[in-house]
Structure formats: structure tokens, C-alpha cells
Image (cartoon, rainbow, N blue to C red):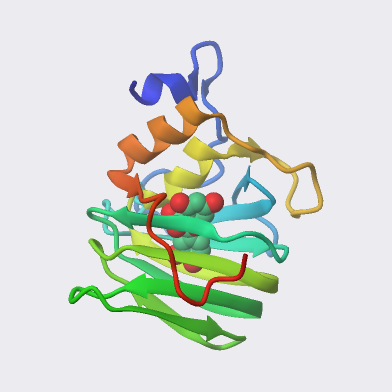
Length: 186
Ligand SMILES: O=C(Oc1cc(O)cc(O)c1C(=O)O)c1ccc(O)c(O)c1
């Protein structure tokens, strides 16, 4: 399955061209950006790989406390987690196989390089800022539902399995459903 699954043939890509799409200077007001709901979380793309010649993208997430985002690995995406509000536990499996986790609180930062299995769980309603390898920011629009509504106060969007598989394939990532974490909440 290819990206075509994620494109409305009549309307084109399912997100709106709010960002310039080329390396031009611009500014955004609070709440502006390209929004997508994924499960209960609102992701907002502030900058995409289209503006940075593929180098990096910047996005925020606004999420209620919820379930563990299951273990997965990005083959070529470096990810960061900067917690602005709330509490987020990030689990990571290091290269030697050691699993560890850290509860991130406001002002705390985490980095997960490409190739390391990881998972995370919002333990207390959170706002996060993420910077990741350019192109990954489209994952939220591919797997989630693009929306004009700028808050997480809207119905959740639960993607079906083909949509999840297509988004994972498109972004060269793999979910690892059998990988458990010693200190994950049920
Ligand atoms: O990508 C981030 O979160 C995710 C959310 C999901 O519902 C499914 C996923 O597979 C992921 C993922 O990590 O791939 C994410 C969130 C916040 C942040 O700062 C990031 O760097 C990534």
C-alpha cells in the first residue's frame, strides 16, 4: 500500500497548505499550524521538511493522560521530546538492549535517535514540542485526521489498521507489539 491511500483523489493531500512549502521566512501566531488528531492527541506541524530542504520539522502535541504509545522504532528519524506542560514517561531500549525510562516534567528534554526502540505515555495532560528529522512531521497527518480545530478538545481519531500500516511504511518505522517495558503503567 502506498501514500495514495492517504490522499483524497478529489481534494489532494488531506492537510491544508498553511505552511509555505519552501524555504521562506514566516511567522505563526499561537494556535496556527497544520493540525491533526491522532487518537486523543492534537499534533500541530509548525515547520515541515518542505521548508528546511528535508533537514528537520517542528511540531507540538497536546495530549490528555492516556495509554502507552506502543513500542516502535524509526529506522531513519531522530526524535526529541521537550515537555512544556504535564508529565510524559519516555521508555527507550539502548543499543546494548538495556531498557530504561524517564519521567519528563516541564522543562525536561529527551532525545531518541533513529534505530532505538521506544515508547511513551502521557501520565498527566501534557504539551510537548518535538523536533525531528524532516518529513517525519507528516506522520501525524498520514496516520491521524487533519483538522482545522486548534485544540485537543474534539473527538478522538482512531485510525484503522490499513491506515496505520500505510503511515508506518511511508515513514520507515516498525511497531514492536511484543516489546514490553518494566515500569510501564497498565
Ligand atoms: O511521534 C510521536 O508520537 C507518536 C504518537 C502516536 O500516536 C504514534 C506514534 O507512533 C508516535 C511516534 O512516536 O511515532 C511524537 C510525539 C511527541 C514528540 O515530541 C515526538 O518527538 C514524537
